[in-house]
Length: 289
Image (tube, rainbow, N blue to C red; front, side, top):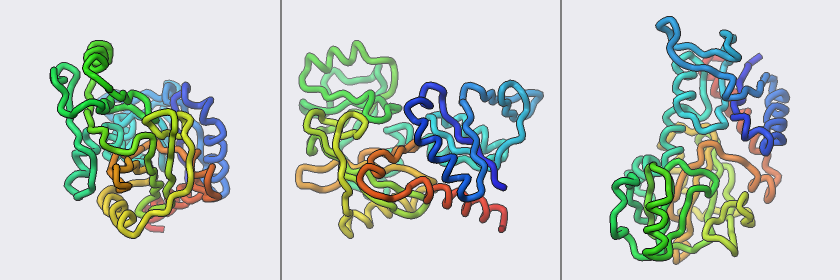
């Protein structure tokens, strides 16, 4: 029987308990033993000159695979080095959890996106590169958090002083505010897309109170998304697009630790069943079974 670790930070378990239970159940239905592991109980590093993983301070039998549901690319890299198959892999986790890196690697594919500038806090220009209003995002923000809509010079000055020392992307806001499209992807397959809307916020995130409906990609949009999918070794991600002023999709970001609340709310697609099947097939292929 295949065995896997489902890794969460303790602070994220409560709000995700139903998802965790569902994931473990779907794995069991496909003869996979999936165990919830608290990230805080793992110790990784070099001990006695060897890459080592400790669980509760003892050497565990490492699993066949791990699904890392917390933003920790170093953990993913270390587990891979120790022979564990990690979903998503460390390279995908590194790129997708850094908004500037994501734009950097997607741009050569010719995917339309809004004008985007990369900045460290110390290097934020006195005069922003875009007319007001524009958007500032911390490169590691998730779920619509650490995203700031800058309406004027006073707000820009205030945010420059108050925001933490980190990296940012600055983006033009010439899009339809409060709308975006999330495309759910497993492996090389586009599963479905959801249109998210908010009438009260420039962000359309479902968890921030937005609404959602199933979205049917046009043939042109499908080909554009598939171009991204074909380029990266995804396991399961959400690819997000802003909606341009003329209704066109503009690349925004890729969610590595993607949930399925929106898709479950608007369809009967069992995303985790498909994901577990994908993981099982990948492991079987690696083992030559």
